[in-house]
Image (cartoon, rainbow, N blue to C red; front, side, top):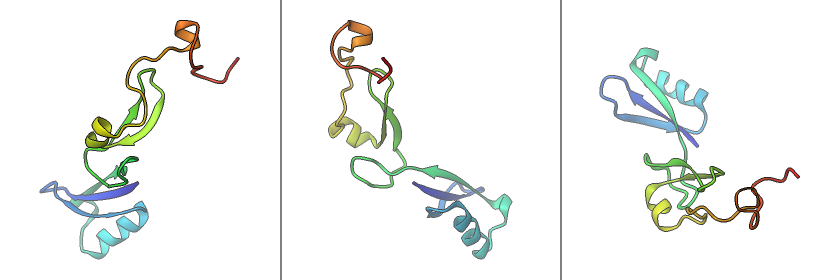
Length: 101
């Protein structure tokens, strides 16, 4: 995960850093005042390990969190099932969704 700083006037990316405090210090060192920039968290893709702007939190068909994946990896290299697979809770057989008995 990285924190990415953007210029408030142009919405263009200025710099990024894994630590939000370091990012703020670097922006101050570059001459930006607090009202001139903003930051967001950006996750790297779990599939290709790249820091892309289209990375989103993903889950399988039952809503179980599977990680952050970019569109390309989600469409082509997603290792989890996207269909509603049989489960003990919903179908009476198959995989168990949780470990609570």
